[in-house]
Length: 288
Image 1 (cartoon, rainbow, N blue to C red):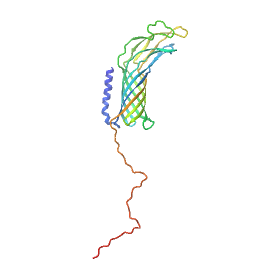
Image 2: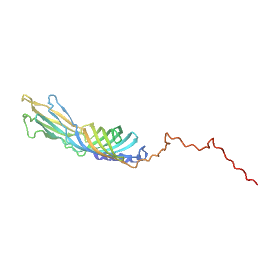
Image 3: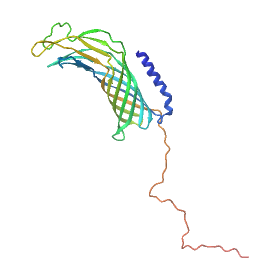
Image 4: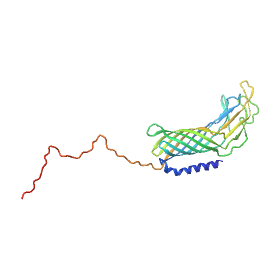
């Protein structure tokens, strides 16, 4: 599945290349962005399950390559490809720390399109703010093992203070998902063709990639009485990211014809005329 999606994205990128000469502004913008990403998995708890059981969202690494095609002076169409490595899991919060267990969905590859509004705000001759809304398709680079049993405290059969019994299975619900994203980007112009970029991005997945359900959850309440509960953890590929990047403007800038205007405040020179008090002189014809 991922291979065919990659071919579709590559064909789309190649198909857009002939449009470069027809665009209002021929200079393309290429940018490479890398930075940390924070996973945004969700957890649904059954009635009575304490909030000490929560999604173990963690930091990972993400990188993107973007190519922007100018559509108009104030709009650009972007094609992008990215790779994200996140390791979300399940966390049990304690007073003096926490215990966690990962679900390990693996790297997520994505490609898509976005509409960018350059220079939404400007803060001087070099610093400006861009905004983007985009959609992408993402897929797991490898198949997730199905019906895999995990334990928060391996080998434990009875709950103890601060050590619940948590047995859950994780399975792949879908190999791919659609992503909706929005970002704002600070752009600092180092030179007319080189930019330093700082991007803040929020990405929301539309369907779960990996789902984890409890087979058994037993814990002790405040009175030391054993209680039962449960939860469902879903990873949709959602995340928040902060990326540092570098951008290039490709091609030559168009040379605009210089319009020369007369200097204001200077009257045009007038042709010289003979003064009124000057007496004209006539030459007499020669006498014989």
